[in-house]
Image (tube, rainbow, N blue to C red):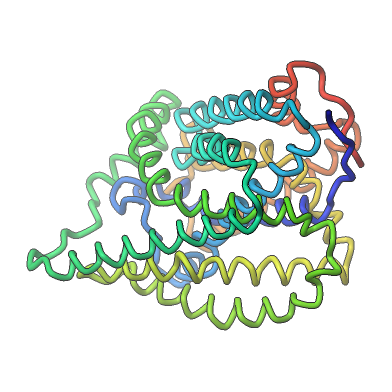
Length: 382
């Protein structure tokens, strides 16, 4: 049995907001692909622009996006009823296939394969209560933080000087491939994607699963559907989130340039404080869109077609920075790269609004729904 749902535009707006942060976090690796091979994809902290991104953006917005994935899963559960298992299996298969294609063709840091796999775990856990989901998420974060701290202790005990992280030769070779012919770009993707995919799965997988569970608990509790329960708490969430999250983010950025395992201590701290800063961001956004509803109208179309936007931002960045297009990687200053990110985000926001005036779903969403439902997609709630 299925049921008709009223579309939650605030959920779409938060998802659209998160997409902007993900673009800012990712575009640096398009602009300088050498980081992916010579710095192991660790935060880029050279220069003031990069330090701001590492502090305020990196690891903060995928947290929001992961939370929204878990929340959206509960909406799908209610909509699909007793068909949720078969449909979610097909949806995850579609996401995984898209992720592999993007990883080898466009964006080495693709996260869709991870989300598809974790989605299967969430599907298996769909019968748990919200309180249990929250406890499980807290345990995952706690265990990961302890592991990072233990590894930091072992690293501090090692008398061997740590190896330098930079490899200019490998970085230059990566940039030459990335800005070469289309075949060179494909070679770069094939050589680099498996390594980065492993890093993403290990580095982000446990945290993403914890946020899936938090979002799942919030969705089962119908959090966004009952704002009267939490609207009065938003100022407090902002205060605690910024007061604790910002110092933690600064420490995280500083720690990534230290030796002796301090970078692992920073990662352990960041696993906790990034959640608080992300919560403060969302609380701020919710207060803004309540005061200025036009913000919801601007952001929610992108959130409604999130998969198309996620793949679209990778495609546009690739056309600008790789040999598929203008091959500008390594040629723009960091502030100019941020300008490109702002332009891509603005274009995608406008395209999303324009597309949804005459289409029910985004192009990627339509294909996913056809696969998920094994039929033409019905008209969604407005």
